Length: 217
Image 1 (cartoon, rainbow, N blue to C red):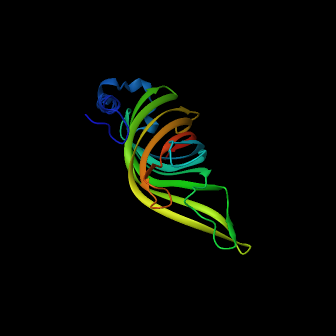
Image 2: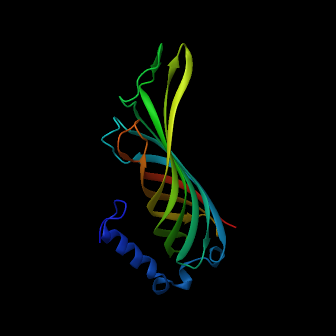
């Protein structure tokens, strides 16, 4: 099996096997029934580590924001729909020339924003729940370089839309029967094209480490 968006075949097979084991691992006394069969929402933010690109110099991840919700299908399975926004900056590409009687700022930015669906396997341990899962979504990748011309601020922008895939792993600690504080690692793979601004396809995804607040409705 060939790699899928950069993920190895072993990783994908392991995740599928893990998701398929939910009925076997479920134990009714290990989870609070108040959380099963209910929708929930979550909000989070954290650090962003972008995937490296040879075309982009001195990449620096800024932050990520995560907003979404889901449905707890069973003790061990949940489905989620998320909006992710992640930001990075880097040295302005040499392909961008200063305008007439103007200048270009030394740093440019790239945002990756999208809506994605996720299937999650959950292993409940009382108030603590650990999980892993994966899914795919559609992302808008936006490049922005700023500068000045004749003393007035200006910007050069390019955008691209692409499909992406992701894997997640994390843990939630329920401080009440329905509300939890958690931490999540999300790795997203997105390839984008920005035309002549950045030659060739770039890796516009990366890894997010987010602190989450989750609440069952």
